[in-house]
Length: 219
Ligand SMILES: [Zn+2]
Image 1 (cartoon, rainbow, N blue to C red):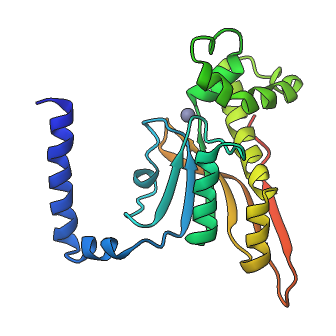
Image 2: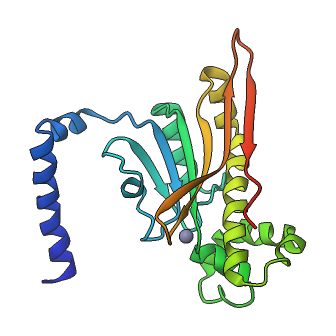
């Protein structure tokens, strides 16, 4: 059987299973969506957002790009953010990186690794700057994989900080004290998600108080 035939066949089996366990599921999903969170993850085929946290259809609004980056001048991710925050009014934004990320590794390796991939190269510009800014810190790692995994965490923290500075996010905090911003890292070797940072906004009587923590990046 061809790969794509298998996918189409599996789709019918999946839909049948879904209906068997919850007969109204598709009627309900057909009515509309109200996801609790926006997930910004990497495109990597080994990090399927819903599967790794057992989320159901309708629970996560998802955007994926190489190395899970937020660019304010990228209409793709910006439109997703705008819709998730202003229309869907999600309560959480999760930026999820993963150890062993090929995009991060390309940025860390530098040189001509990205010469044949000009779009990827341009997209990863901010990661290359992050690597340059942490050059001294990265020297203490002898193995490339350790450097990469360290930058994976730094990158997730940088994306959460970037989100926290966006007008769209600040306006939403002012209006409804949400969304909270979560930085997570997925470990391909164990299948586990780890929290690396959290930024949330709360407060009573109209006071806006920002709270955040971040784990010292591993290493
Ligand atoms: Zn990746």
